[in-house]
Length: 288
Image (cartoon, rainbow, N blue to C red; front, top):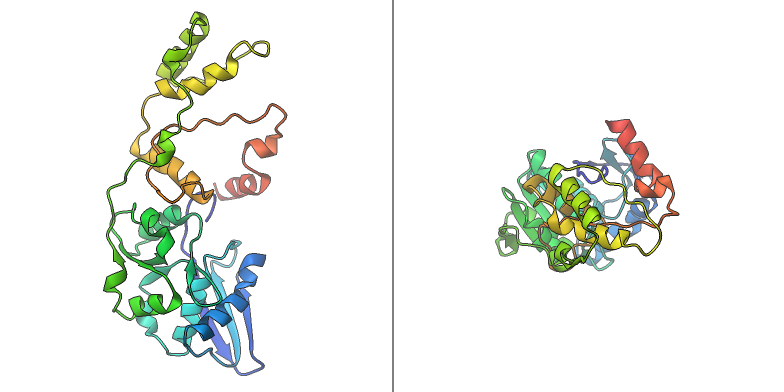
């Protein structure tokens, strides 16, 4: 992930004579460095042979920091392919995502929706994701999706026998988050001048500054402003849904979020927290 957009990371594996060890390069974070032990146990406990010798995993592009456990499945399959326990040419056609448990089962990861979109935009059509992420990944059309529950299942899908894990893409439904309403603008009694200002701002897409003493109704009015805003376009809805996906807020019934979000940070919030953290701010500045 780069902000809320997914991009393709190529996992390369190599081996050489020497003391048994696995090294991961390509700017991995701490969670990704710990994948060495998870992957080793998952490979053994799934019935595969762990490659011998000095092993090296490279995550390309090497100049972008990699975060999170979503690379576990890719690393495990790359090591298995290097040991010729699976067809490496077939594996090159797949994008694989998922965190591995020690017994080889797959656990869900956050941000599946923008990751799958990034893979599709990069030209990939075959994806393997954890079973728990199937509904969210199926929101993206134009892909051949396999939702598996373990490393063994992923190996079977790459080998061409994964038809029972094939998942159809679905027509995007409304997210349950749309059911969370912040109040209707029609409920506001009085405040004629303030309501007129909000209606003009909503119709023209203008910024709005509310001033007044505590308790005069500023927050109450702001909460109800989304109820009179125009519906989001498809691109806007997808962008909002990507934010919820990265934050892990879509829940067990994912869908496209079409209700305009409303956020009310405390007045003591810092500038860094208001824009989402300094790290993301620096990434945006460097990559625009």
